[in-house]
Amino acid sequence: MKRQNQSSVFDFILLGFSNFPELQRQLFWVFLVDYLVTLLGNAIIIVVISLEQSFHVPMYLFLLNLSVVEVGFSAVIMPEMLVVLSSEKTTITFAGCFSQMYFILLFGGTECFLLGAMAYDRFAAICHPLSYPVTMNKRVFMNLVMFSWVSGITVATVQTSWVFSFPFCGPNEINHLFCETPPVLELACADTFLFEICAFTGTILIVMVPFLLIFLSYIRILFAILKMPSTTGRQKAFSTCASHLTSVTLFYGTASMTYLQPKSGYARETKKLMSLAYTLLTPLLNPLIYSLWNSEMKRVLLKVWRRKVDLHTFRLC
Image (cartoon, rainbow, N blue to C red; front, top):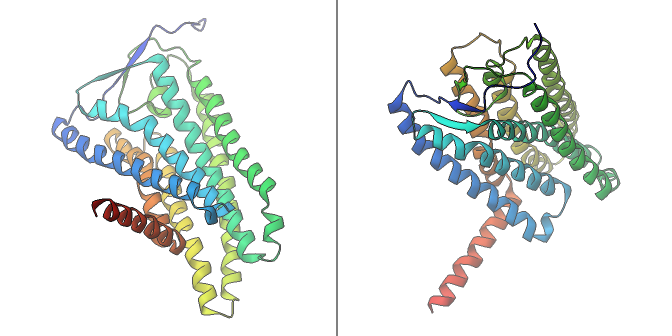
Protein backbone atom coordinates (compact mmCIF):
# COMPACT_ATOMS: atom_id res chain seq x y z
CA MET A 1 0.00 0.00 0.00
CA LYS A 2 1.39 3.37 -0.99
CA ARG A 3 2.24 5.61 1.94
CA GLN A 4 0.20 8.81 2.21
CA ASN A 5 2.09 12.04 1.59
CA GLN A 6 -0.54 14.26 3.20
CA SER A 7 -2.03 13.95 6.66
CA SER A 8 -5.79 14.22 6.92
CA VAL A 9 -5.53 15.51 10.50
CA PHE A 10 -5.11 19.29 10.76
CA ASP A 11 -5.37 19.62 14.54
CA PHE A 12 -5.26 17.48 17.65
CA ILE A 13 -7.38 17.30 20.80
CA LEU A 14 -5.54 17.12 24.13
CA LEU A 15 -7.63 15.08 26.57
CA GLY A 16 -5.69 15.74 29.77
CA PHE A 17 -7.44 14.13 32.75
CA SER A 18 -10.90 14.61 31.21
CA ASN A 19 -12.05 11.33 32.78
CA PHE A 20 -11.46 12.94 36.19
CA PRO A 21 -12.95 16.47 36.02
CA GLU A 22 -12.58 17.03 39.77
CA LEU A 23 -8.89 16.16 39.57
CA GLN A 24 -8.45 18.55 36.64
CA ARG A 25 -9.86 21.48 38.60
CA GLN A 26 -7.58 20.77 41.55
CA LEU A 27 -4.53 20.29 39.35
CA PHE A 28 -5.20 23.59 37.55
CA TRP A 29 -4.54 25.65 40.69
CA VAL A 30 -1.58 23.49 41.73
CA PHE A 31 0.06 23.89 38.31
CA LEU A 32 -0.73 27.60 38.11
CA VAL A 33 1.12 28.18 41.39
CA ASP A 34 3.91 25.84 40.19
CA TYR A 35 4.28 27.84 36.97
CA LEU A 36 4.42 31.23 38.70
CA VAL A 37 6.93 30.02 41.31
CA THR A 38 9.06 28.38 38.59
CA LEU A 39 9.19 31.58 36.53
CA LEU A 40 9.91 33.74 39.59
CA GLY A 41 12.60 31.45 41.03
CA ASN A 42 14.50 31.02 37.78
CA ALA A 43 14.11 34.70 36.85
CA ILE A 44 15.67 35.69 40.19
CA ILE A 45 18.68 33.43 39.53
CA ILE A 46 19.09 34.83 35.99
CA VAL A 47 18.90 38.44 37.20
CA VAL A 48 21.19 37.94 40.22
CA ILE A 49 23.90 36.14 38.20
CA SER A 50 23.65 38.73 35.40
CA LEU A 51 24.01 41.70 37.78
CA GLU A 52 26.51 40.30 40.29
CA GLN A 53 30.01 40.67 38.82
CA SER A 54 31.52 38.06 41.15
CA PHE A 55 29.17 35.47 39.62
CA HIS A 56 30.58 35.90 36.11
CA VAL A 57 32.52 32.64 36.40
CA PRO A 58 31.78 29.31 34.66
CA MET A 59 29.98 27.65 37.60
CA TYR A 60 27.35 30.38 37.85
CA LEU A 61 27.16 31.09 34.12
CA PHE A 62 26.32 27.41 33.58
CA LEU A 63 23.61 27.84 36.21
CA LEU A 64 22.31 30.90 34.36
CA ASN A 65 22.00 28.83 31.17
CA LEU A 66 20.26 26.07 33.14
CA SER A 67 17.72 28.58 34.47
CA VAL A 68 17.10 29.88 30.94
CA VAL A 69 16.39 26.28 29.89
CA GLU A 70 13.98 25.80 32.81
CA VAL A 71 12.09 29.01 32.00
CA GLY A 72 11.81 27.99 28.35
CA PHE A 73 10.73 24.47 29.28
CA SER A 74 7.95 25.75 31.54
CA ALA A 75 6.81 28.43 29.08
CA VAL A 76 6.43 25.83 26.32
CA ILE A 77 4.40 23.37 28.41
CA MET A 78 2.55 25.15 31.20
CA PRO A 79 0.27 27.69 29.43
CA GLU A 80 -1.17 25.00 27.13
CA MET A 81 -1.44 22.58 30.05
CA LEU A 82 -3.41 25.11 32.09
CA VAL A 83 -5.81 25.57 29.17
CA VAL A 84 -6.24 21.78 28.95
CA LEU A 85 -6.94 21.51 32.69
CA SER A 86 -9.52 24.32 32.56
CA SER A 87 -11.63 22.55 29.90
CA GLU A 88 -12.72 19.02 29.02
CA LYS A 89 -11.02 18.95 25.63
CA THR A 90 -8.56 21.41 24.12
CA THR A 91 -7.70 21.71 20.44
CA ILE A 92 -4.11 22.36 19.38
CA THR A 93 -3.15 22.92 15.76
CA PHE A 94 -0.83 20.60 13.84
CA ALA A 95 1.81 23.36 13.75
CA GLY A 96 1.29 24.13 17.44
CA CYS A 97 1.78 20.48 18.38
CA PHE A 98 4.93 20.32 16.23
CA SER A 99 6.34 23.46 17.89
CA GLN A 100 5.57 22.26 21.41
CA MET A 101 7.21 18.87 20.84
CA TYR A 102 10.21 20.53 19.18
CA PHE A 103 10.94 22.86 22.10
CA ILE A 104 10.32 20.16 24.73
CA LEU A 105 13.00 18.04 23.06
CA LEU A 106 15.28 21.05 22.53
CA PHE A 107 15.23 22.15 26.17
CA GLY A 108 15.32 18.57 27.49
CA GLY A 109 18.34 17.63 25.34
CA THR A 110 20.13 20.88 26.18
CA GLU A 111 19.63 20.30 29.90
CA CYS A 112 21.18 16.81 29.66
CA PHE A 113 24.39 18.18 28.18
CA LEU A 114 24.47 21.27 30.42
CA LEU A 115 24.36 19.06 33.52
CA GLY A 116 27.28 17.06 32.08
CA ALA A 117 29.24 20.25 31.40
CA MET A 118 28.55 21.47 34.96
CA ALA A 119 29.93 18.20 36.36
CA TYR A 120 33.10 18.59 34.29
CA ASP A 121 33.45 22.17 35.58
CA ARG A 122 33.25 20.97 39.20
CA PHE A 123 35.75 18.19 38.44
CA ALA A 124 38.23 20.69 36.97
CA ALA A 125 37.76 23.14 39.89
CA ILE A 126 38.13 20.58 42.70
CA CYS A 127 40.56 18.01 41.27
CA HIS A 128 42.84 20.46 39.39
CA PRO A 129 42.43 23.83 41.14
CA LEU A 130 45.79 25.24 40.06
CA SER A 131 45.19 24.64 36.35
CA TYR A 132 41.44 25.43 36.54
CA PRO A 133 41.73 28.93 34.96
CA VAL A 134 43.38 27.33 31.92
CA THR A 135 41.25 24.17 31.84
CA MET A 136 37.97 26.11 32.08
CA ASN A 137 38.86 29.33 30.26
CA LYS A 138 36.33 31.48 28.44
CA ARG A 139 36.76 29.62 25.16
CA VAL A 140 36.24 26.18 26.74
CA PHE A 141 33.20 27.47 28.61
CA MET A 142 31.64 28.93 25.45
CA ASN A 143 32.33 25.71 23.52
CA LEU A 144 30.60 23.61 26.20
CA VAL A 145 27.57 25.91 26.31
CA MET A 146 27.30 26.06 22.51
CA PHE A 147 27.69 22.28 22.25
CA SER A 148 24.85 21.80 24.75
CA TRP A 149 22.48 24.09 22.86
CA VAL A 150 23.42 22.77 19.41
CA SER A 151 22.95 19.19 20.64
CA GLY A 152 19.48 20.07 21.93
CA ILE A 153 18.57 21.74 18.63
CA THR A 154 19.86 18.74 16.64
CA VAL A 155 17.92 16.21 18.72
CA ALA A 156 14.73 18.28 18.48
CA THR A 157 15.04 18.85 14.73
CA VAL A 158 15.69 15.21 13.84
CA GLN A 159 13.12 13.62 16.15
CA THR A 160 10.27 16.09 15.64
CA SER A 161 10.70 16.17 11.87
CA TRP A 162 10.66 12.37 11.79
CA VAL A 163 7.54 12.10 13.99
CA PHE A 164 5.57 14.57 11.87
CA SER A 165 6.70 12.97 8.62
CA PHE A 166 4.29 10.11 9.43
CA PRO A 167 0.74 10.44 8.13
CA PHE A 168 -1.97 11.23 10.68
CA CYS A 169 -5.34 10.16 9.33
CA GLY A 170 -7.36 9.92 12.54
CA PRO A 171 -8.27 9.62 15.33
CA ASN A 172 -6.81 12.92 16.53
CA GLU A 173 -7.25 12.69 20.32
CA ILE A 174 -3.95 12.80 22.24
CA ASN A 175 -4.46 11.17 25.62
CA HIS A 176 -2.05 13.51 27.34
CA LEU A 177 -1.64 17.07 28.66
CA PHE A 178 0.76 18.24 25.97
CA CYS A 179 2.35 17.08 22.71
CA GLU A 180 4.97 14.65 23.91
CA THR A 181 6.47 12.13 21.47
CA PRO A 182 5.01 8.78 22.71
CA PRO A 183 1.29 9.76 22.83
CA VAL A 184 1.50 11.63 19.50
CA LEU A 185 3.25 8.69 17.84
CA GLU A 186 0.36 6.40 18.81
CA LEU A 187 -1.86 8.32 16.36
CA ALA A 188 0.42 7.83 13.33
CA CYS A 189 -1.11 5.82 10.46
CA ALA A 190 2.12 3.99 9.66
CA ASP A 191 4.58 1.47 10.99
CA THR A 192 6.68 3.37 13.55
CA PHE A 193 8.82 0.42 14.71
CA LEU A 194 12.05 1.71 13.10
CA PHE A 195 11.52 5.18 14.57
CA GLU A 196 10.88 3.75 18.03
CA ILE A 197 14.08 1.70 17.90
CA CYS A 198 16.13 4.70 16.69
CA ALA A 199 14.48 7.09 19.16
CA PHE A 200 15.08 4.71 22.08
CA THR A 201 18.72 4.22 21.05
CA GLY A 202 19.16 7.97 20.63
CA THR A 203 17.60 8.65 24.03
CA ILE A 204 19.95 6.12 25.66
CA LEU A 205 22.95 7.89 24.09
CA ILE A 206 21.72 11.40 24.91
CA VAL A 207 21.00 10.42 28.50
CA MET A 208 23.90 8.06 29.15
CA VAL A 209 26.81 9.99 27.60
CA PRO A 210 26.34 13.04 29.91
CA PHE A 211 25.41 10.73 32.79
CA LEU A 212 28.65 8.77 32.42
CA LEU A 213 30.59 12.04 32.33
CA ILE A 214 28.80 13.13 35.52
CA PHE A 215 29.37 9.76 37.21
CA LEU A 216 33.09 9.60 36.38
CA SER A 217 33.57 13.26 37.35
CA TYR A 218 32.01 12.72 40.76
CA ILE A 219 34.00 9.54 41.41
CA ARG A 220 37.17 11.61 40.93
CA ILE A 221 35.70 14.50 42.97
CA LEU A 222 34.83 12.16 45.86
CA PHE A 223 38.40 10.83 46.07
CA ALA A 224 39.77 14.39 45.85
CA ILE A 225 37.49 15.60 48.68
CA LEU A 226 38.41 12.65 50.92
CA LYS A 227 42.11 13.51 50.48
CA MET A 228 41.63 17.13 51.59
CA PRO A 229 43.33 17.76 54.96
CA SER A 230 40.98 20.58 55.98
CA THR A 231 37.43 19.91 57.20
CA THR A 232 36.44 23.39 56.03
CA GLY A 233 37.82 22.64 52.57
CA ARG A 234 35.87 19.39 52.40
CA GLN A 235 32.66 21.12 53.47
CA LYS A 236 33.11 23.90 50.93
CA ALA A 237 33.83 21.43 48.12
CA PHE A 238 30.83 19.34 49.08
CA SER A 239 28.52 22.36 49.20
CA THR A 240 29.45 23.36 45.63
CA CYS A 241 28.63 19.83 44.42
CA ALA A 242 25.59 18.95 46.53
CA SER A 243 23.15 21.19 44.66
CA HIS A 244 24.31 19.91 41.26
CA LEU A 245 24.12 16.27 42.39
CA THR A 246 20.57 16.80 43.67
CA SER A 247 19.57 18.46 40.41
CA VAL A 248 21.11 15.60 38.38
CA THR A 249 19.31 12.97 40.47
CA LEU A 250 15.99 14.78 40.10
CA PHE A 251 16.33 15.33 36.35
CA TYR A 252 17.67 11.90 35.38
CA GLY A 253 15.36 10.05 37.77
CA THR A 254 12.15 11.61 36.45
CA ALA A 255 13.32 11.66 32.80
CA SER A 256 14.21 7.96 32.92
CA MET A 257 10.77 7.09 34.28
CA THR A 258 9.23 8.99 31.36
CA TYR A 259 11.36 7.99 28.37
CA LEU A 260 12.99 4.67 29.30
CA GLN A 261 9.92 2.86 30.61
CA PRO A 262 8.42 -0.14 28.74
CA LYS A 263 5.82 0.87 26.18
CA SER A 264 2.99 -0.90 28.03
CA GLY A 265 4.55 -0.93 31.47
CA TYR A 266 2.15 1.48 33.16
CA ALA A 267 -1.45 2.66 32.83
CA ARG A 268 -2.01 5.81 30.76
CA GLU A 269 -2.90 7.96 33.78
CA THR A 270 0.25 6.79 35.57
CA LYS A 271 2.36 7.68 32.52
CA LYS A 272 0.85 11.18 32.54
CA LEU A 273 1.76 11.66 36.20
CA MET A 274 5.32 10.44 35.56
CA SER A 275 5.61 12.86 32.67
CA LEU A 276 4.43 15.68 34.94
CA ALA A 277 7.13 14.83 37.47
CA TYR A 278 9.77 15.29 34.74
CA THR A 279 8.31 18.47 33.23
CA LEU A 280 7.21 20.27 36.40
CA LEU A 281 9.35 19.24 39.38
CA THR A 282 12.78 19.89 37.87
CA PRO A 283 12.12 23.50 36.72
CA LEU A 284 10.39 24.24 40.03
CA LEU A 285 12.98 22.77 42.39
CA ASN A 286 16.22 23.71 40.62
CA PRO A 287 16.21 27.38 41.74
CA LEU A 288 15.34 26.31 45.30
CA ILE A 289 18.12 23.69 45.31
CA TYR A 290 20.80 26.06 44.02
CA SER A 291 19.78 29.02 46.18
CA LEU A 292 19.33 27.10 49.45
CA TRP A 293 22.48 24.94 49.24
CA ASN A 294 24.86 27.50 47.81
CA SER A 295 26.24 29.84 50.47
CA GLU A 296 27.44 32.43 47.94
CA MET A 297 24.04 32.52 46.25
CA LYS A 298 22.31 32.94 49.62
CA ARG A 299 24.71 35.75 50.55
CA VAL A 300 24.05 37.68 47.33
CA LEU A 301 20.28 37.11 47.51
CA LEU A 302 20.27 38.47 51.08
CA LYS A 303 22.36 41.45 49.96
CA VAL A 304 19.94 42.23 47.13
CA TRP A 305 16.97 41.83 49.48
CA ARG A 306 18.51 44.19 52.06
CA ARG A 307 19.18 46.77 49.37
CA LYS A 308 15.54 46.57 48.32
CA VAL A 309 14.32 46.89 51.92
CA ASP A 310 16.68 49.82 52.61
CA LEU A 311 15.56 51.58 49.42
CA HIS A 312 11.90 51.09 50.33
CA THR A 313 12.54 52.38 53.88
CA PHE A 314 14.41 55.43 52.48
CA ARG A 315 11.50 56.29 50.20
CA LEU A 316 9.02 56.02 53.07
CA CYS A 317 11.13 58.37 55.16
